[in-house]
Length: 68
Image (cartoon, rainbow, N blue to C red; front, top):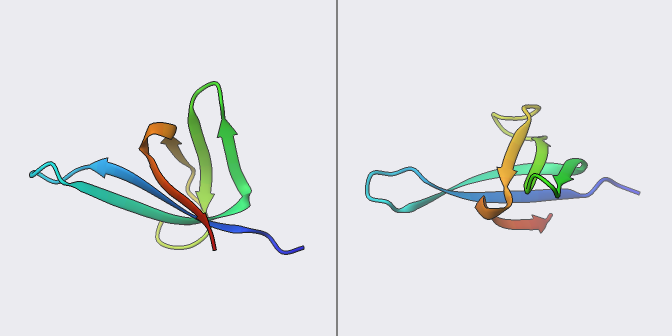
């Protein structure tokens, strides 16, 4: 069975006009951990400039998670 890949998109407010901007990462089902008590998703992107770096995203900041 092949490993499932996911796109995780989070929203954040970073521009000076208050417009929503988005960060997007591609990750694998093998490197996603759901922290229910802490309300975080923990993962390591497998592609792009942040590949291999641990990311923590609060549930409230998750915009989209979809399977590729």
